[in-house]
Image (cartoon, rainbow, N blue to C red; front, side, top):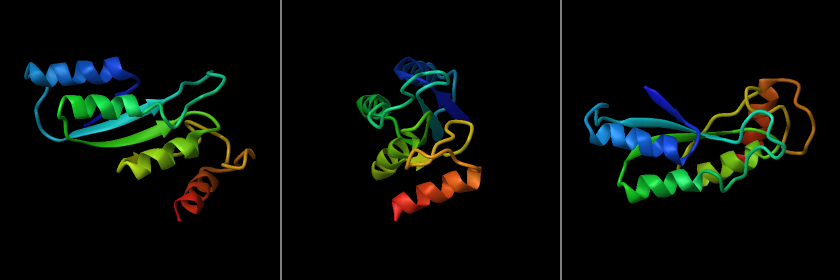
Length: 118
């Protein structure tokens, strides 16, 4: 089960539910969502650090990934990748390539990300 989390409060609520044994204590699979539809500036590569801080503070081990809205999508994904996170990319979050051009397909979005990782 993947838990989709939009902010620090969501993550703290999830941890609380586990601490109360309402949710099982097995592997946590988390998706941190950065930015939102309609936000002028979308996401920022530092936005997910609050999630990482909460995991560390509460000593929670998790398999986590990041998705990010807007033109900074790839920068956010690369920052997550450097810290051991996984990356989710695609039109559901952003239509723009790293160079600011409008992407024509999800394949182009993935290719653009892969170029930056190498």
